[in-house]
Length: 369
Image 1: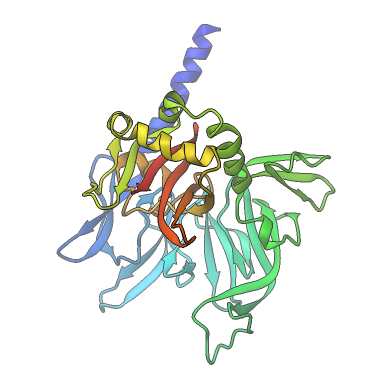
Image 2: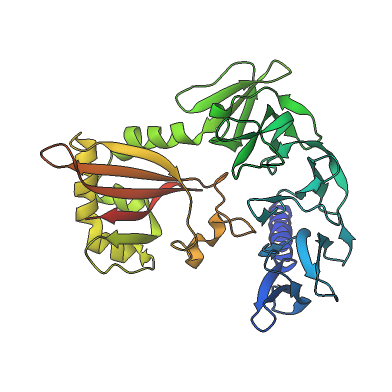
């Protein structure tokens, strides 16, 4: 039995290491200002011939590229590692950003139908372009919009002849699975944007609404997801603050912390936990104790893991292959406090930034006076 377990462990480790070795990574050629891909050992697999529009940092199976052709024009398509090109002129682009492979699927856009679908890792259509909009797959689930109309954020219909700068799809929002089956239909916007797809539980009864959002599926079952907003607020007020002391502060602080001390020359690089604890522990406890005791109000908001600030290697696992904050798995929250003058006007603001990790929420940054 021990030999069998050892064999299985070795196989799992080999599979993980082999998967990592099969990854390719983008590199930038300063002379041509183009990008290409290298393997884990630094060997060039694809010479630099793609524009900066090709921004996928990790090449797993399929990537969208914009290649400089011989006539100095650019052509776009999806590229496989074997050199096969698929989906010419079908790149999915949103806010000047192309898609990134997620769970062996990647979105594509059909110009003729003005709809979105999914390729699999081999460039085959696994979900046809039938949706106005679709989010990437997370835990085998994706949010989609169908039967939609473009609307301007001024709540006016979109006019193609005189387009507004910011618009959205107004349609029917649903959750689909990887087989393109609708699991939950007619979702309201206010319940979907902070769902933890990786926490899904399916049952005949809804779960505790203090943390979960419960959605009734088309099959009559409840699809329950942890609501990140509810979860963080519950943790912050019911666990973190009540148990706050020097030991718990250190235990709930990340290995690197960004510190911005106003009116002082704060570094622009994260500092190590040991240094942070020694230098700032007493100050942070004092600030947070004021919230705990009700002396200062706290305003909690969802944030992004800004790459310009959190570019240290320890934060790399919290970004996607495209270098974007992986907020679907690792959301970030800011706790903002304010100090008022005697006349009730704003005197100063301070903030504490928390990142959700595999080991719970951790303090990763703060701005203090």
